[in-house]
Image 1 (cartoon, rainbow over the protein chains, first blue to last red):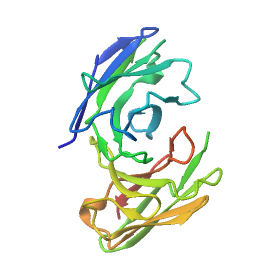
Image 2: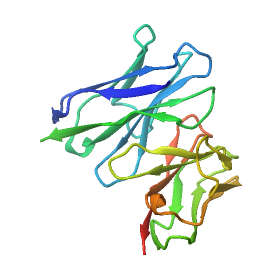
Image 3: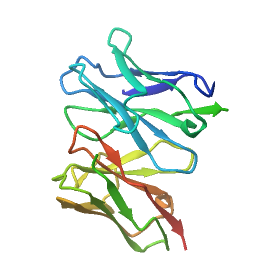
Length: 120
Length: 107
């Protein structure tokens, strides 16, 4: 059974660095083709793909945010970590972690999301 | 980055209606197009992948079509539980992107 869960601070201040952790079970990021992404959604707005890390440690970032994002994995803990620097109130959003299986390009399992509010 | 444009942004429909949502890519994405349903306060759920393949457990009233730059999601016989927001997402380029969403509301 696949589960995905996000964790991190609910509140951060402007200019601070946000660190979010995705903890998953039921699959391994050592399996060929496996991928994990971070996606966010500001209140009342659309989904925005942020970053992805693949089983072979390839990493991909949204062009608009790439200078602020770092994604990494700890396969021993079944975790993926996203850091976002220089947070701003416009970064207030629900942040989701999602799995992509077998060298596919869709998200089949999502976490429940974690709401991060950035205060000015 | 590849831009995804959905239309309409919102629509009103009645139970039993046939509803079609379109998604256009700024360049060809072959058939690397996926559709998700999102209900308020919940994470999105995969409906359709690779333009027309129905994800496990998704009712057959949902269908997808298209290739290249133009795609559509059709709900044949709208049910009360289908009132939600729908998103397309491309996976052709290494950098994935979503459409802006289409909200399906009750008429």
